[in-house]
Length: 532
Image (cartoon, rainbow, N blue to C red; front, side):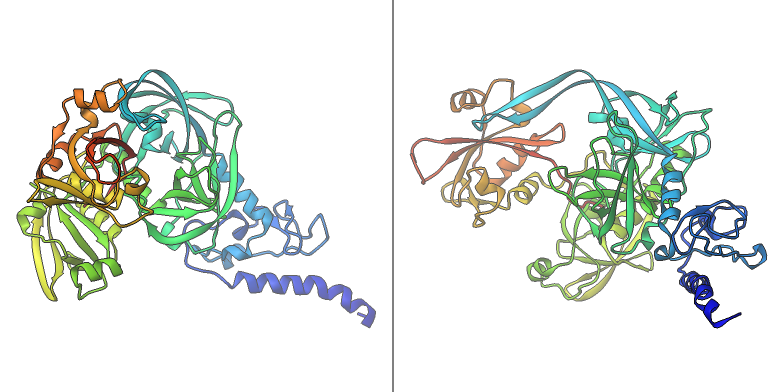
């Protein structure tokens, strides 16, 4: 070999050396290795340009680079390359393979329900939805035999039964049936029996890294397959309140309308989450149900058709500076009890507000999601032991779970205070309930409530009609007189309607026209406190 020939030969040698160095950067396996990592029967990707070559090729057809080989006897089972070593061609191949599992879910349902609403002038009324509706969502096959995962709000919109069918990407429309539904986590399992839908493998959401590339897949509306790329934006266990039981994976992959129920996949083409909610007006707000949680629920639905969750009756919150100050907490790890639901096992067992739960069945309790899923997974009538810190003393408490109610709610006064960032206080001298709010940016201020306003009466949504609640109509609708917070609490039990909070207040204020009572109608989308 002459001196002039050396530079021309160093390029491919360095390319092979770089490839071998990249191959050495591996992390624990999260699933089967991609096809390009294993045997000579798979496509081979060029280490320089990333082009895909036919199995068995020795040189890249695009730039002539020698292609690496890995003998079958040297292949280590379970080996998975680090994502940064994957070429663009390998990623596209994995995503396209995963996309074959995605289906459109067609939904036909008859709606017949009422829900509270407010018009442009602030008058509340009861609206009606009574017609046949045709809706579209997404789903994906997880096993051979037509097993398809989607959201509960897709499979049963508005909680109503529906006729379901699937559109496969080859043009077939497949009849399917609902196997099971878990409203608490917003997951459902369908089956198109006898179909040969390609299946996608579950990944492990617990191994996801901040900034990792992900893809949101779906078949929204009638525009065909949709693939949007993003990155994992938050690794914290986000509690939004959309679902009763949640632990969202937050990414900035854009969710198109109709993507609900589709998969969020890794660059290896494995499912890291089930797309559940996106904010269309603000980019970077995509929330997916993590794969580890989704797989657990789906396995229960497949085995038993339902997820019988355990329940204690505790409202809990993560420990933060507000909780530490409020309850003078001695411990920063675990979750703090905010309230105890009446008539529940938690009340019988003697839990108190300010208790810090940091252990369950001899295991440490790092956060509220682990507590929620641990209690859910044991089901009803299960004996468990929680370890808590009460004023610096470690106390074990034995308690037996019950079945989780369909709609568990905390004290309605506390619930409304949580929404409004305000407080309702007894004034025993004047026999009135006074509103306390000093936050000018709270919803209480937005809806026209002011510090010191007095609640004279309320009309919860259950008492509304189709007639607009003008002051005259409000007085004629027999609102409940309010003299104490107990009166308010009893009335507010009827404010929950069709996933919303609706209540009209008769207020007395000193701000203007003090002798003329004001009527404020309030309607909010219901969000869920963290209840276990």
